[in-house]
Length: 115
Image (tube, rainbow, N blue to C red):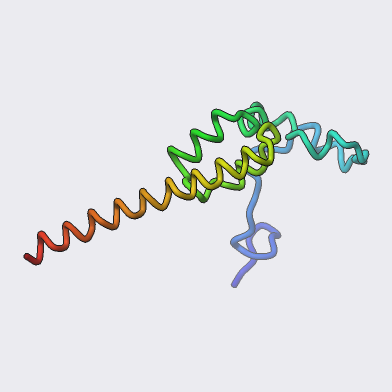
């Protein structure tokens, strides 16, 4: 293999956009505050607000992810522990029912094809 433009290998990645002036300033010291853990950085926009919305989390659980989205439920600080357990059980049952319905449809289709 040959080297290209003084890089270690021909498949080295390069940034598409130049770094922002904040990133060029160099490493900064992070002060250990309690707010640093609970809030997303500003560059994420409204992601933290969306993750902490009860309605958005429940819509995601029931309409998109099923039981695979349970970590979203447990990360949401607006749900109490009892609500989290109740919604987790409801989402698991709902997802299993949907999987059962799909399984029943597949079995019915198979019988229609073979019979």
